[in-house]
Amino acid sequence: MRIVIVGAGPVGLFAAIALGRRGHRVDVVERDPGPGAGRRERRGVPQFGHPHWFRRPVADAFAEEMPDVDAALARAGAHHVRSRERDEIAGIRCRRSTLERVLRQVAAGEKTLTLRHGTAVRVLHHGGRATGVQLRDGVAEADLVINAAGASGRYADEFRAPAERVDSGMSYLSRHYRIRPGAGSGPINSPLGFFQFFDGFAAAVFLQDGDTIGVVVIRPTADERLAALRSPRVFDAAARAIPGLDRWTSPACSRPLTSVLSGGTMRSLYRGQLDDQGAVGLPGLLHLGDAVCVTNPISGRGVATGLLQARQLVGSLDGVRGIGDATLAFDAWCVRNIRPWYDDHVAWDADLLGQWTGDTGGLPAGPLTSGRIFLAAFADRDLKKVVSDYSEMRILPTALAAVEPRAREILTSGWQPPRYEGPTRDELARLVT
Image 1 (tube, rainbow, N blue to C red):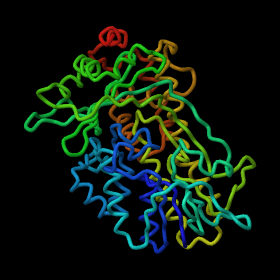
Image 2 (cartoon, rainbow, N blue to C red):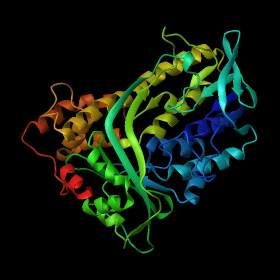
Image 3 (cartoon, helix red, strand yellow):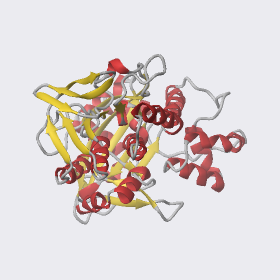
Image 4 (cartoon, rainbow, N blue to C red):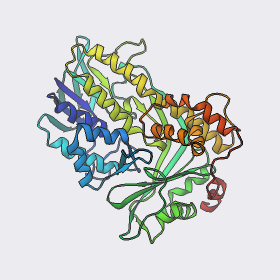
């Protein structure tokens, strides 16, 4: 089968390599030059330069489908991290740029795959099905077109229903540092490195490849006082005031590698394969990755949900006869296995923002969000095991419903979750202003 994939991010490249190794001829069209090619290397991917952490589904996808990619990532300095609850790989610590650079290098060596630097203008179709992609400088003919161009583009919009989109009400800023030789380590409390919710904001340190770390501060978007964190001097001063970040960013431990990067408002999105009537809008056109689902990057699930989709899609095309039926089946699979992550974040984000801004008092009357259940897990080891499986994406968020009554019992018993010393958001705002 001749396949054109629009978009050479991690999901598009993974799908291209996997499909090519199954005997298909694949063209990948990407307008950005790629990692290492200049300042505008990924202009359509605002999250590209920010810290990343790749969860277990990403590690599993490479280990099981592409062990050569897994080995190349290790040579590039990426670190596999093991689960605290299980003696198994829980994820990969690595920069997004490193991951994409490795995937591009592998893709460039595939005989059945062609990387084309260009801009996709529209999907070509004839006789009621997709026949290729119109480029600004030519045409790429295909039996199947896969849209992996991300959520921000409007590519092939006319063939499916509008997206559901919810802003989290949170924004983030980040900065990269390099650990000095022999400097040791700061605190680590999670597989990604260090993550902590404080009073009215959150902060994290992402351990990455090559002794690099990414430091993130997450705030309510409406609180403009913390916009001053865009200044490197102010960002470093705030980091020195936040327990956990202070050790990692001290001059004795690390040195800055970048300016402060603004991440803007974090949002979640879901968009299926079908049109307004619930039918396949254009047989031979499929949507993948962020074009289907985006979740608030506070939890780092974007590439994980994308590769889960890619593996399902690639497997579903083996021996396929009716592409329309395959589209319906893939859409139904996404509703069952990908949409729950979107719904989970919409609920959790609203609850967390309400706690940060004082709009949410006490426990919600309805089902507890995953964030509340996560807190209750500090008091119950059995509950903690379930939450760990959820955090590593071994189970869907819907599986937490089985332990929700136990979590509510804990949270209404008078038990208090552990509190961490550190400035409140008001105190942090006074510091930075």
